[in-house]
Length: 197
Image (cartoon, rainbow, N blue to C red; front, side, top):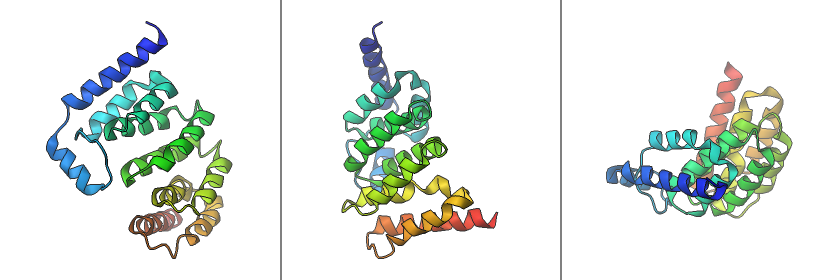
């Protein structure tokens, strides 16, 4: 089987599993919980987690194909898959993080992408992640600004990074957007939790 045929087969299998496990009630729940979700089938997250785990051999090309579909479940698998691949492919992960961020439309994919990449790359790519956080904190786009905050989540556990995180949070103190205020409060709680341990 050629690489192209293998990718096509993986994509076909993923789409079949998504549709076969779809639940309309779950779609309604997700659309209410995360306004902005587009083209959702309603497939539960545990199914998507298993698909991301099973298809890691598809690599970065599969991530790109899944993302390009615009379907919620496929994009969520894409960012979960990217988190699994990031350590072996840091340049590809950073590139896709930058490509995907401008197209974000809601918090669940935004946060999954930010948390997965930062957890995987916190040792080797801290400088690049912090540079992106600084750059994106000034964005006029809501979800790009949220990305700039959530990228810092994993770093809360490291004492040497907390001063930088607090400086970054200060950029958002006057932001009136609901999802920015929630992200700032979340990271502040995480800082307090880590400092108390």
